[in-house]
Image (tube, rainbow, N blue to C red):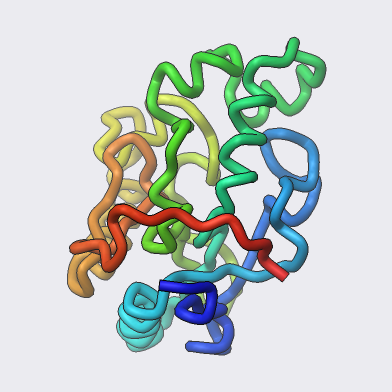
Length: 204
């Protein structure tokens, strides 16, 4: 598999909304993450095409996918690890994204990983938005909010919020994606087309 086997999700389905926070400073690190040089989200060919089918199902319900992250370069994963070992210097961001944990505890508690399925081009972080209003469905916590309330089956959220999470889950599972239980937004296509290979090219 090569870089040419990756697809920009906007090319597969132009109506998919892309909010690639790691290409901006609007993320839990407060920095543009290495490897993210454009407001794009990419996946390997097979998962990308499967996600386009999810989008079609969502649109039939008056909804639309919003993508936060797809393929993640290895250099970005290494950056997160290096960031976690630095002293806390931004209490405002900590309060927004990980108020109950230290940086290194994000790895210890499974919110971040030294090796990411994102780097294999098969994992996507996403939510649903109302196609008319353009607003995200209420999922009970924001993307990259590292806390138990973000666990997909968290008892800390309302019935309505749980219904929204389960709707996303059902749409994704119908097309081969499996949820990571600690993050309602995190889905991996199964079986992974290239389970033993990671990539480090920039998103640009």
